[in-house]
Amino acid sequence: MRVFAFSKRNDLELLRDPLNLFFGVGFPIVLLLLLTVIQRNIPAALFEIEHLAPGIVVFGLSFMTLFSATLIAKDRGSSFLQRLYTTPLTAGNFILGYLLPILPICIAQSVICFAMAVLLGLHVTIHILTSVLFTLPVALLFVSLGLLCGSIFTDKQVGGICGALLTNLTAWLSGTWFDLGLVGGAFQKIANLLPFVHAVEMERAVLQGDYAGVFPHIWWVIGYAAVVTAIAVFAFLRQMKRQ
Amino acid sequence: MDAIKTIDLTKKYKDLTAVDGLNLTVRQGELLSLLGVNGAGKTTTIKMLTGLTRPSSGDAFLNGKSILTDSAAVKAMIAVSPQETAVAPNLTVWENLELMAGVHGSSKDEAKNKVAELSSRFGLGAVASKRAGKLSGGWQRRLSIAMALISDPQILFLDEPTLGLDVLARSDLWDMIRTLKGSMTVILTTHYMEEAEALSDRVAIMKNGRLLLTGTPAQIKRRAGTDKFDEAFVRIVKEAAQ
Image (cartoon, rainbow over all chains, first blue to last red; front, side, top):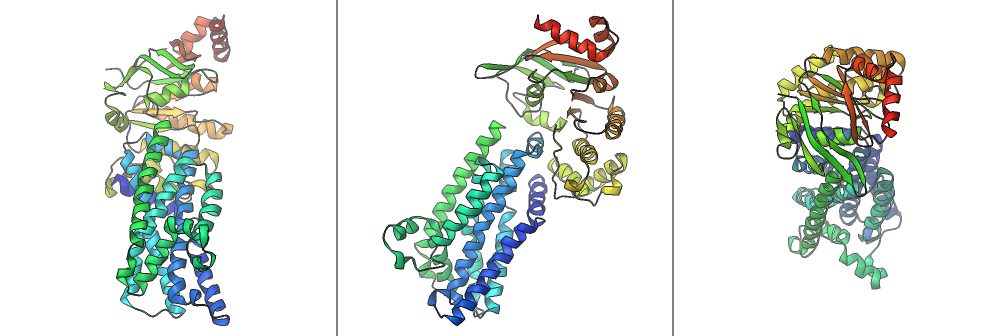
């Protein structure tokens, strides 16, 4: 009940912020529309809807880091979190309360993105449903990144780091906007060492029903999600102790 | 049993001793104001008593429960209304109260009843569906105190509850705080001397982390040889510097 009460509050805070709704849902849809129009005028395999939709889904999830981190950093900066620290909520309650409520929002965002992709020509198959399920580890990665950044940075810093840096990193290094092989070299190597391109490749494989193609990408995503979650929990507990 | 008993409670931050061997007793149902100039150690004392900061040494017992070894029991019996208005801005007044009931473990029905009772007691019914962030400072402070009371605490900490409020809003909050007297132990920190004098059963004055003296407002005025409470406070604090 305690975690539920805290989670519900976090959900309401996030969903009632119009900027969150615009960037969380509106922006990925606009991108899907825009790139599909471009693809129709100047055909490019990369922007074909079955190729593009998984990339946009992953890119859209990167905004969850911004939302989650902003919420936590703002709470830390106000007396609100201090008030809650004096209640019987435990450290575990806080961590779950910040992580869990954003996951359904991530799923909803992915469903909306795929629904838009269907309207733009994506064939309806069972693989869409599986793709949505496979966004869970990706969502956990981005939400945990939010917990980590929110535990370390102020809300102003979070805007720059998560809002500008992370979303750009996700965009540039995920292979959504351009084929990383075209750049090659160190750029591609760095991209391959980060989870973003693996998240997109995993989603593309699932959407095509190529479940063997999920590997090894899923290990990269799960590995990063596990490590980032562990570091985020440590950072949150550390700041909680400092408060 | 005393509501609060601190034993050589000390907090050190590197070279700074924020609270230095505090020995203070607060009786059940008493309203005690903790006074002191900035840096006196009031906020650190409150932070230790509410489990936000661990003491460097010493201990404190709230209704017999140690803040060191029984913090869960302590947290279950206390409530805090922080200095800043600690409300969730995008939640309505009703939802803020429901949230606090929920985090204290109330069931949905219990929470609903408590919220309804507190809303009517604090006159929050008219603004119940308004978002807390849209309320005036006075209403936010009123909500903040109501949020603290939703768990029926045995000990309530009010940190600068009327800071920055206009005269009318302050007077309203004073009336509200007076209604709490006797039903629970209240620890109030304030910089407003008239507030401490009007509301307190007893006053504790701190300076540089040390407790200078405790007494009723009348006793403190007698001790300082003046009939003005703010003057008495200034004399006592200045005397301690000599």
